[in-house]
Length: 477
Image (cartoon, rainbow, N blue to C red):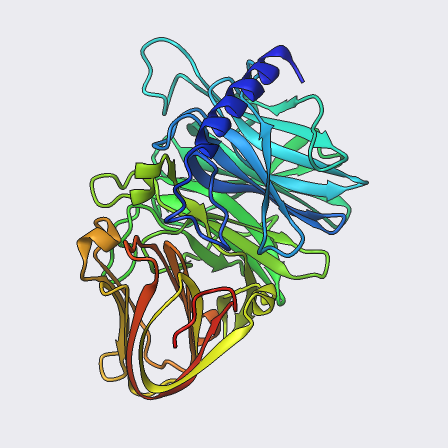
């Protein structure tokens, strides 16, 4: 810990103390991680260490619209109740002085090793794409899960292939077959997004091994890569930039997609059969980790960069912005990567209301609708202005804001869903997550009710299910 770190630590503590005096909690979720003040984006360093879940995230404490990036840190025993542990990494070295950017965690030999991108923007006339930017790969380790030691610079721009721009970032590291592997997202000089694979014997000295890419460009940059194994499949996850909308697909500014690799990742190419992870308005930069019980769990940023001209977040009025998704268990069913809320969520609810065909009432601000049977049409309106609807004859599931203030500018998203066998809708104060057909399709969005409770109006002939709440929530009479 150097002098600059201690200075940053003091300044951040002062900012957080000021934020504590703001008692406004109207849009603070109960189950989702949110920043105490300022801006949150990518989840980083996800892991479970000695029974404790650790989530780090990109954090700008001084400006709710973004700025200099730190790593904030939260811990939990159940992935539902999170404790804020403060700042884990600060931009306090010459090789990360303009931001401790995204990265990952490796748990091994009684310690957590964090790998991340140290961002440096050189002075002078640069476009910061082809010149003027250092994308340094940095490692730091700690044994108590809270405090970390000396940072080590392990790769610089000179260690990456020569045909790339300065944009190389977001290392994801894992160990397999006695060797260490790392993927990083990159942008080539020809504006093609790719993933770089590196290999190491000790986790410190790395050699370039393979380039994961499609034959034709799919966006100009691939951010936040992840590579993992689940249910016998090897999955590559990326967040591409520069992909054009295609009907109902790719309608957000940027996307997050996955693809199954057909061959060994050490030699494979990418077949281009991408599938969007989330069809809603607010999902980007997901990262996964393997829990101690073997589950593959993913968390995403429930937000989106560069959307100011389209929509915003009303929590800016209270000095903070963005949240993370609920942790999701990953599995493969019928050749599709599925996402579902972690099973720990079942322990949160202790009060249940059954419904059949229709339901209308004002509930609290945190609850879940769980359909066990779905008829030929469903129309659910939340807070009077967020409509979720599906008709079998049309075969499209829609998420539409009819109240622009409620959606803060968000409009309409849809996905082809020919059959709807089951449906889960999680509402948590200012966010909604929708899971269809066992998690084969997911929609995530923020919304901003001005009332204390959330009104629920459901018309779903032939459907039945239940609403799950906590007993300490206000219940209908």
